Amino acid sequence: MKAFAAGDRTTLRNLLAPGVMASFDTAIAARESEGRTESVEFLHSPRADLEKADVVGGGDLARLTVRFLAEFRSRSKGPEGEAVDDRRTAELWTFERNLKSRDPNWTLVHVDAAEA
View (tube, rainbow, N blue to C red):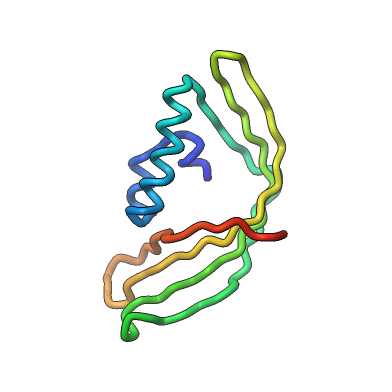
């Protein structure tokens, strides 16, 4: 969330599947074209609960769906000034990892809104 708010495409590319990265990049570019910046700070530690775990693709691919609940403060700055917004969000993030890979990182492949 912080890398997205900061527009840190380098960090995001290492963590996101191409389709998710394209979506995030579109939102970052729109924000940049409007001359806005954004930062976030968590008001409490986010809660993460495992919703689902599967092994697919002939047993080579692990897929986890995690429900995140977070309360955060978003600060936006643009030509019109600064805005501060406290928000609560619930999202389902789906991660994948090739079990035969030496790379220990999981890739975010899908994000959905969820009910808290």
